[in-house]
Length: 192
Image (cartoon, rainbow, N blue to C red; front, side):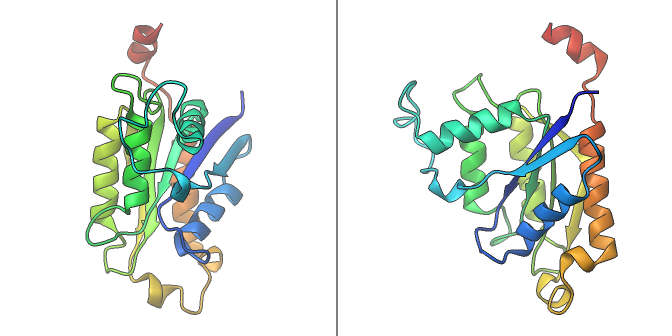
């Protein structure tokens, strides 16, 4: 079996972000034969603007993001919740991934969403918005592969996420589901 590649996109840009630590757990607990990498530099991508999205002139970091998503077997979004929705940096990433129209880098890519947030529900509204946008962008979203942890400030005040058995198992399970995902035979036949 060929190695599977999972790309993580983290919605928090803070150096000590708990969501970044979730992405690290995803990489360290991935099934054997899986490479999990985190895309860095989301904050370097300009806000999506069709005037910038011109063949041969696409900003380098946006082109790098598109190529990374297109090359991955799966994409794992790791996100907090900001003001009841996804962070702007992830919304912008999805905008760049989904265009140009009809040429989404997410088409044929499996996607899942996990994360933690200060609210009691762990960012569920944000996660739902990300799933919706990814579906529109052409990704195959695994709605059952999800994991959200609420009250992050309290839960991780004294305990690092990698030392929390429930967190490690929840993330490991989502990544394993993402790695095991296969296109239905009918979709594979249509693609060929």
